[in-house]
Length: 66
Image 1 (cartoon, rainbow, N blue to C red):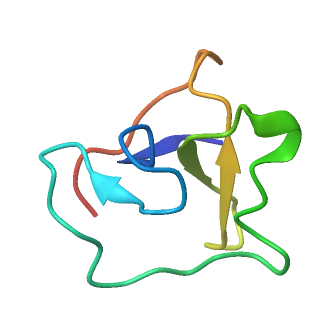
Image 2: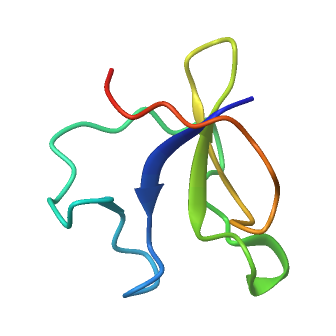
């Protein structure tokens, strides 16, 4: 699953685009974002289109524009 170029690295719980812009839309999966183990700051998209927060340390493709 690819990353969306969205994270909350600067402020936990405040997700922004890589350019710093605030989100105008979100599509979180049920019970997400959950910051599991305190290490999930990046956002991935599932094949269903729903979002999940995930560790930024994982190697994944990234979607820069959608």
